[in-house]
Amino acid sequence: MSLPHAILTALLEKPSSGLELTRRFDRSIGFFWSATHQQIYRELNRLERDGLIHALPQPPSRGRRKEYEVLPAGRAEVARWVAEDQDPRPVREPLLLRLRAATVVGTAGLATELRRHLALHREQLALYEGIEAHDFPPERAAGENRLQHHILRAGLGLETFWIEWLTATLADVEAGGSDGAARGPGEAAGVQGSGGEAG
Amino acid sequence: MSLPHAILTALLEKPSSGLELTRRFDRSIGFFWSATHQQIYRELNRLERDGLIHALPQPPSRGRRKEYEVLPAGRAEVARWVAEDQDPRPVREPLLLRLRAATVVGTAGLATELRRHLALHREQLALYEGIEAHDFPPERAAGENRLQHHILRAGLGLETFWIEWLTATLADVEAGGSDGAARGPGEAAGVQGSGGEAG
DNA sequence: CGCCATTATGCAACTAGGTGCAAAACAGGG
DNA sequence: CCCTGTTTTGCACCTAGTTGCATAATGGCG
Image (cartoon, rainbow over all chains, first blue to last red; front, top):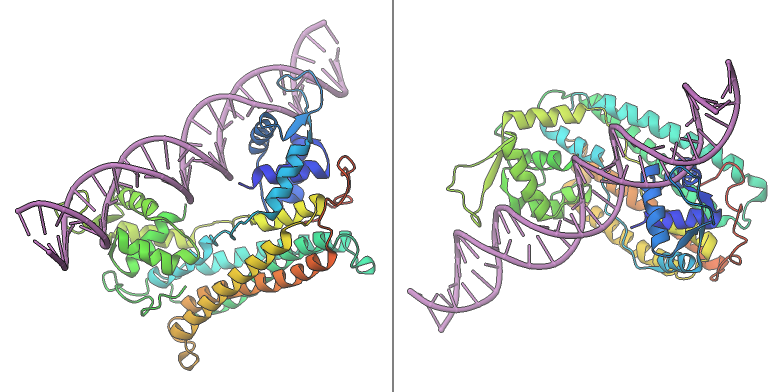
């Protein structure tokens, strides 16, 4: 249940309309929690219904722009949520599943996918580096915005990790080259994980 | 849509019943794609209906154990999926959102959460290291199971990244200590992101 | 045999995110 | 003023994952 809190945070930073929020999600908050405009409008209505935000007084009708502002109850809810016990979400990474599948059905087409992902992660890293250069120049390091910088560093670090991992994995996949099925159908039993069941 | 393929992969590795699959998800596949037994049973029925797997001939009735096996169509589907164009899923990380929220409403309670997450990630790293020591001992490196090892290394790398990041971030959060709201309500406008809108 | 804990499968309802499309308001040109 | 394209909000439906609970079979024990 993070979307409502993401929206509250965005509105605390700056009261906005739904469409403005959508644009800010696309370019900033969405790096770590993406949302479509439909989701955002739906959630704005719920938040207003629940008394956490309110629309600035305007005769409300369908296509008319509505500017929202966070109410004290909303701010309190965000503060509560920041301190809340919340376990890290389990990793869900289809690419790793596909790698595992490739050990059984063969690696045909896998290298192409790895290369494509590598390119995408490099692109994302470059984007983050641009933001860092712009918003956190070395001269005024250790300012008020240490936390913001850490958030960005998480993005930088994750992309860097994937680039390194993909590079290493790709090298082995290209070297191995067992494109066909690793073994005939029917003999696949009991191959993976000799008790410990790794990765 | 990864669950059906995860199940197919698991069944290719070793034909199993629903409950066996559930246990293997808990201890191995689920590290990168978790699933409950209810999800697994539901998906097994769909996969059978669609002709990708079939249950070994047994008089079928409610609580009776059913062993499943992958059909050729199922294996082909997995091979197709391995090579399929599939963009990396966008990051969804509530902890980073909460950090961002903390820059607005204050960091009260945040350090505790960071410490808790740090402990959990250290635990998970230790688990992965145990598996690596057991399944990939240094003497028989570079064997047939290079790919499996890379999968595990992804887990190791991610946990390592989070541990480092949490350690650095925690240091700053504990140093800063602006536990209360960073600024009075109402003046929050236009603070975050001077155009570039970082992190 | 009768009882009970455990194994094993499964349904139903709910939550949250994703997709497609519609409709009201607004802005500008003719 | 009217038409048209764009902005802005929103509904309806769908898919996937989660939670709570139900029910059948099985294996041991008295």
